[in-house]
Amino acid sequence: MLPKKTHYHKLKHKLAKRHEDVRKKVWDKHAIPLADLANNAKQVAMGSMGGLMLLTSAQSNITLPAPDQQVIEETRSIELDKSVFFQSDLAEMLPDEVRPLTKEEETKTGELLSAHYGIPVAAEIDGKRLNRSYGYIGAEQHLARYPGDTMESHFNNPDDAAKYWSSGMAPGLGAWGYFVPAGQQLSETDVQREKYYLAVQTFLSPNFNQRIREYRDFYKFRKMLVVNPNNGKAVVAVIGDAGPAQWTGKSLGGSPEVMKYLERVDGRAKGPVLYFFVDDPNDTIPLGPVDVAEQKLVNKE
Amino acid sequence: MKKKQFYSHIVDTDSLTRALLELGLKDDEHKHLEILIESTIHHEIIDAILSELSEGDKKIFLKHLSSEDNHEKVWEYLMDKVDSVEEKIKRAADDLKKELHKDIEETKKS
Image (cartoon, rainbow over all chains, first blue to last red):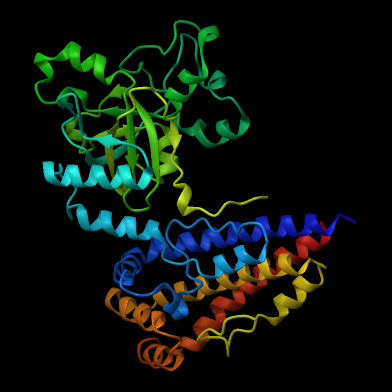
């Protein structure tokens, strides 16, 4: 017979998954009234939320923590936490239509994102900026990292292959060519850059034609924070390609990994994202999904 | 002790508590899983209700729900807005409970 502890851990895993699924369903289907309530709830003492006590927030990852009494009590009181307030603040700040933000909107949004994610971001750095910082994102394909890189050689593990194979490989190279001249030279940095890359409309930057070289150097693998304002999910990615064309109605593209994490899709169900430059002169901010530590309960399993 | 919800009189979770007890978990582990189950059922029921309401009514319902345990007011509102609301809540909870029992049974056998 397996030890009892194993039973607990196994069941916890199953139940946490179920909880996460139903939480997501509720927030996906009824986001507006819930966010609206969260907004009004700013005025309400958390202890007096009656029947909402067990209703967890849009972002709250209630894969419950280790079972000590204090944490259990904390869990009971989890509800419309900071992340919901962040999303409702963001919703209030953003226009109803998906259009370029005004300078004032951009500044306020940048400040909110910096404060929430703990990552300094800006729409403009050193007088250089993209055409916009809020727009529809489309799905890009994987990029060849070196000559001979194929779908067969592209993934480090079977899990990634299963998740991302279907996106396929782009027929051409990214804006900066191959990431490395040969497969043997591929570093973890290169792997991460291809995994978390964006295609942005570099060619629509103000005065691009007069400043091509300057812009090119600036944009090459420039880090950006991309945020899905509807669920608060955020990724740090690099600019790896130029596009999409204006006629597509999309303003940027995301690698399969970026799109998956942000829960954004292409086509008729496409949705907007915010995208701001990460101010990281010392290159200390890692690429990939951003955790907002204070939002999360630590699963000590 | 479990928190009394406005639907507690029609949604009985004792069978799940008993099934958890059969796993012989430590007290804190048991409580922990009980909270997860309770919260999952709560979400499912809230979803079942919200799915029956208009956007405006959803807001009013949530407002009632957030007021201090005023179950009567919640029921009064739901009875007025949703046909056979008790039956719908019960069905949503029962379907989920079956799945949760399955999870517990599978764990027991593993």
